[in-house]
Length: 429
Image 1: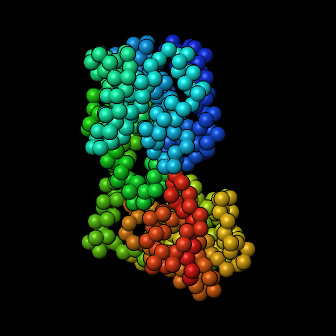
Image 2: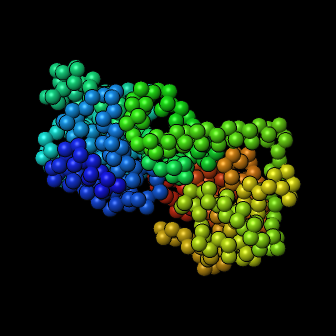
């Protein structure tokens, strides 16, 4: 993506060395803070670069006329709009972004060399606040007013202020749609899972919130979105609309599943699976396909998946539809703690004692979350662990879920992780 941005910079006349230094400084800082391409959160360096790339690529749209000077501001604001490498939650806070920019001496010098007004950069970044409504909008608008007062270029120029706000709206729309135009639906689904995981959303919310997100974009930003899409290559337009339609189709399927469950036309049956079926290649593939729907950080033993299914020390339960031979829509899986290589930050005092079983994150097909099938599989897994004489069970879960289990199951936090708030915990069996 860096090379593509550099090519567009030349095309748009952004040829000063300081523009390239800004790009490389951003990449270096995100990488050094653990927010590079390997960070499993939506707001990583890939997102930062994608927004920068598309904001330059679509600059010839016909809704807002950009001058050469405007393009400098668009480029710099896009590049730094999520410049919050020390964040404690995935979604950057615009106030934190502005504070970080104001404290970074190298960046301050690069902006000075580019001859742009930092107050206008601040306005454009504040306008990317999402959602642009309620208290968030009100707070951002108050800061924007102050930025306009602070700038000699905007203080007494209402027309220019309005133009800058239009530029900010453009950047805000690019911020929300660029990643979904730069790849197929597989990439878009991964982005949705990354966003959900990093923001500690329950899996049942992924599709629902994705649909609401796109409907809000299509309904409330119609003019500027159409103008941007019209300027983009045909393949990118196709990617975007394929993604929107695919999420809506999955949401429709979810509603149908929930309706069947509500009408008692569908039953979810947790099932203990024996070793014979666990050696069946078709059975293993079925589980693996469901396993791949999990966010990447929750895919334990991926390289050794088939062997782990066949391992008699590993407990496997499935969630089947209607009867013990029905379609498999989910599974629970786990085994001795010592068989797993967990995150290096975890220091489990029971590791090596043979008294703890690790439950991998539950895996269900999209549409079947929130129907209590996962909870029933988990309780079945705990009962089996108890019969095998394990004293403790450890696993990962959302922080608020663990808190809810502290009284009921004597759950305790072992290691907490931010920004994702998907923590490692222990219960006594």
